[in-house]
Amino acid sequence: MLERIRGKALDLGLAPRVRTVHTDLDTGLPPMAPVDVSWASMSLHHLADPDRVLAELFAATRPGGLLAVAEFSEPLRFLCDEFSLPTGLGVGRPGLEDRVLAGLRSAHAQSLPELGADWPPRLAAAGFTVLEHRRFELDLRPGQDPDAVRYALLWFGRLRLGLADTLGEEDLATLDLILDDHGPHSLRQRDDLHLHGERTVTLARRD
Image (cartoon, rainbow, N blue to C red; front, side, top):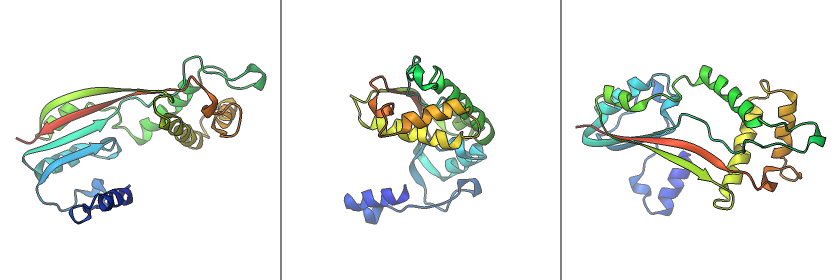
């Protein structure tokens, strides 16, 4: 991701003004000049102690500086409630996505306990003044955005790998069928695929 940022900066002629830093925020913020704007996208829930990091970021932010935090509480969904595969296959019974997401939530409860936290009061506790908290609904279908299919394949591919020891054999077999790019049951062949979810953005200021 840092390499992509450097590449974009180079393409736009902004390379002399852009510096990327690879650091572990759980060990503290890197040295930096007073900050005008910070944007934390889908990242705070990965930290062991986000409240400490927010307090450090408040101290590093100049008066009048802004912080924007983008997060989510529920995973994305791609399949309709009636999703299934032909009964003759012996797999693909309804409820696949619900079972997959249940496994994901169980894993997140152990590895990402801050996921789904209520961030506005935590920003306020760090010293920021919360200016706005908005929810953005995502609802894309392949006809509207071809990347929705690619995203779905990447999403279920990662879940297939990460939940291999959690899901039953039937659900794993179903995932293999819908992830097969060249198979007749691939997600690329379905017309009921959609990307649906929600993101929240909180804007705060150091007064």
